[in-house]
Length: 271
Image (cartoon, rainbow, N blue to C red):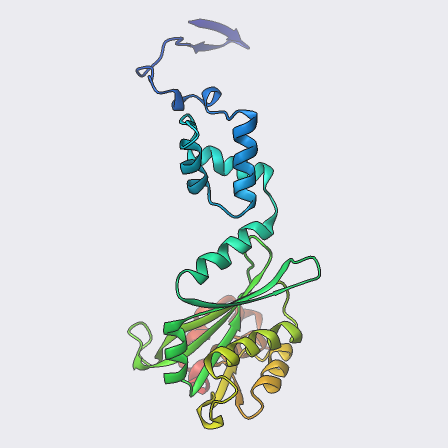
């Protein structure tokens, strides 16, 4: 126990050098013992780079009598020595293909993934069954690979429990894109049409309309791939944009009382 007088204030500290819990008999509990030899580490890195998961690598290491390593250790090796993002994206594509997804991907000259379109068999059935209206919107946030998600949704035939005035929505497909351009949107929509409605499909079975947030690049792409389909603006975006512009013309007193914006006097023309 140490006692110190600092500026007439007493500080007492106590240090215990004994373990407060029983010492583990397992070597895996101590990081110093969870290290791979040079040959085993090279073997593990090559497997990870070829697309194997840390769990699969662990099983293969056990066949080499390596039992002092964990999945967490292999994940750390993956992050340290295999930081090529393309490896994880290719693994994502393989997982989709093994779960009854139709997958299309776009690469550049260096074989880097630029876009990944995917749709499940169930999504194809729902798109054909509920083809009257397709809702398309891209997320504002990106994933760890700096890619945005383009989401394809159809309006169901049942009323939503959360929003009684609205129909339920059914996600049917998605597309990860490295950038939001007309070319990327056109590629994604082309994959969507080729898989769900092949060339021989009757024109009357194609989507009647598309609902978007009025993004110019997306509108051009829809016009190119589905020239006979109508385009309408998303109602939620109409409300948000209206309120955003409406607030700019309010007095400071009204702006201070945000509850007034929810009153019928301000909202009746939006219902």
